[in-house]
Image (cartoon, rainbow, N blue to C red; front, side, top):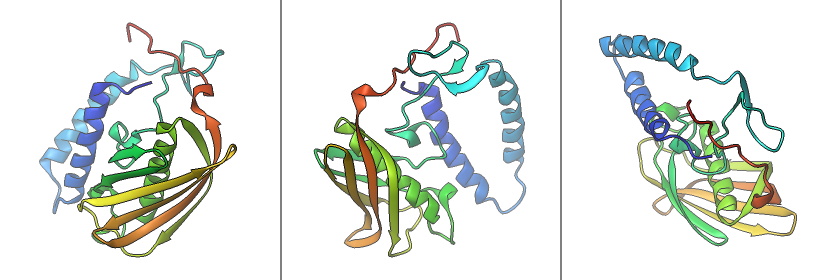
Length: 205
């Protein structure tokens, strides 16, 4: 299921605003105003929450369960907890770009290593799904070679090999000619068309 347009816009805004809030030198009136607005929105959004937060999937789904969004592709586009990136897939090869905002800072001016691991898992599974294969991750090894800077446009590449039952991907993140970090991701191969049916959105919500 695709995310709603306002959800996509909200994710981008939350990333930007989080970075601005983290960079404030003192208590900000604007942050206080935002907090009060969010508290009001929380009350109003609660009215639209499903009674059961388990995802609505498969033949035995129930109307009171939660709508499920596609978590294999472009998660960062609608969920600010995940990195946002662009990707071009050409068979077993993929390339793209990413720029990590302040919200993902670990050491001063640098990306937290945990977010780099999340990033690699996202782009590898996105790649797998775009070539029609699902891949449940079984192992991932991340090699941190150089500190990864925030707020800088970075390039990445993914190269995959596949057998009937296994997927193996090698990914790397680069700044110019310098490799900042890389990952080896192993996954179980599956046919994406055989995933459980995603229930459509209910009308009148």
